[in-house]
Image (cartoon, rainbow over all chains, first blue to last red; front, side):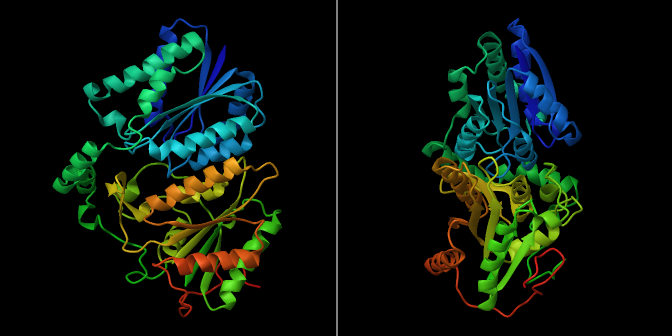
Length: 224
Length: 210
């Protein structure tokens, strides 16, 4: 079986998306499957035609990308627009979001199903996962559990050629925050702890004092 | 009212779509509203790189040196933004989508709870209402329209706004205008009053008002 992995993160090789697909691939390797795979970075737009050609020679295509304002990043949509009919292929997706709740990805996931049908391909489903921003800056004990799930997902995929629905459902949680989490979070918000990471970055860039800048408000600024 | 129509039609050969928006614009212009079309395909616009410089290095300002600054200025000072695009493969064009995601400098990196969901905090005091106009494909079905609409409702929610209308170019322009006005009247935050033209109607990146 031939598998095309398309990394659709605008951050390319430095993306959180890659950290997750790497785990998935390690799982596939471990499963001793005969899957032959290649990864393409869609941010390298000069390779678009090569990517499409490889997709046409593949049996399964895995398209992985981050959620960008409630949908797929623009580079992914552009790639979607260029894709020819892929009848007979199987397509699965991996969507990562910075928000903790699954609801932010919900309608995009519905769209991916429709889009796959439009290509004439078989829809394998979408692995969606929230709270993924800044993965590479987290300590290994924080990412271990998450990486293990993507590894297992890959292992299962190597054996069966499809996603383990149990892991898929688990990764999507929580769809919305529970009442308890909301209460805790609103307390945390009041302390300002949740702003800490951004403030640290702002300070290191000498931008903390202007963090509330409104550079395009007409009352203050003329048109650029 | 200040109305900004963001035309995400990538294909100059699709004149019908551009003409629809021009007719829509002209009616509001004739009534004295400050209304402009932003022709995305004539502008220099890159893709968001996810660098977050607009959040942690130059707050509120995108690092990509292209025409996005004019769009940020137009959008944040408008009362109503109409995101307009033909549907391609069941969704807004890549041209419109890439522009939508480049609006994040208008928000804060910080988050807060909005109706029990996590969203980015507002950077500006005022955000425009949203409307959407799409052109159907030959095979567009109700399911795709529903999903596209839902995603645009979520997008408006993330930008401290609401989706006031979702129309297709199958709706005659006169009816689209009536629907727009009806939605403005029903919206407590908007008023139909005309303001003096604070900006020229014609610039390099807007379509001409013939």
